[in-house]
Image 1 (cartoon, helix red, strand yellow):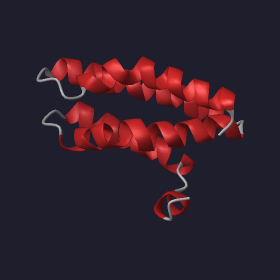
Image 2: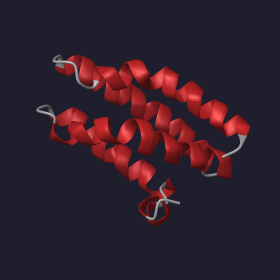
Image 3: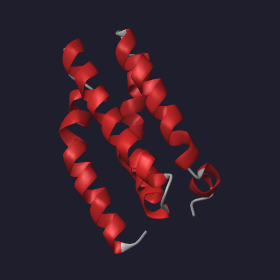
Image 4: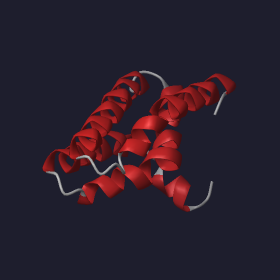
Length: 106
């Protein structure tokens, strides 16, 4: 990943960290708002990534390193909306993941 992409990754990670933390909040409303915010940000990044390769790498790294454990935990949320948004977010990110490369450690 290029230096400018690494900077974008760091900025997004910091910007989303509060919302990632809120995914574990006891309040259903806070969890729903957090996953909605994350989903909107990732959707914007995915739209940009469809046009350029750099943002695609950012999407991949951001999801695998920062979001995956927390977003997948939302798949078993007691509220339907966070589950629904989590599924949509995973489906949105899936085309950008190079799972073979990740699995082989490369």
